[in-house]
Amino acid sequence: MSDLTSDQNDAVIAVLQAVVDRVTSWQDGAEEETVRKELRDAIAESDVVVDGDVQDRIVDHIVNDGSHVDVHRFLR
Image (cartoon, rainbow, N blue to C red; front, side, top):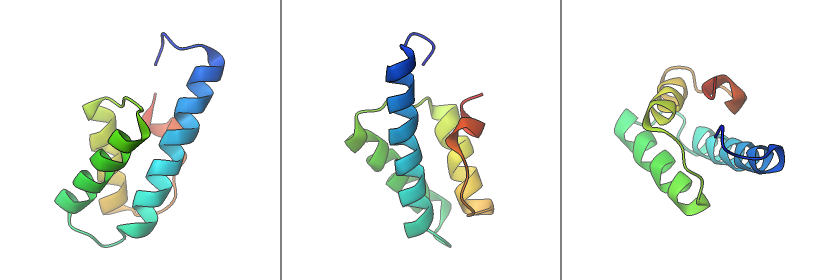
């Protein structure tokens, strides 16, 4: 995301936050592979590119914590 303008970066973060919020609310208590698939599918639908390691950290949070989280935490 470092090659994006500030406005593009803000748009990507907004989309990613919406995806994470959706998956978190719908997948509470789901198996890890289900969460991973739903997150991957939702990201693909959004046309946002998210590194695999970022996706792994998001999945880990959803499966093990399940609470809302600001996606900025995963993009550091």
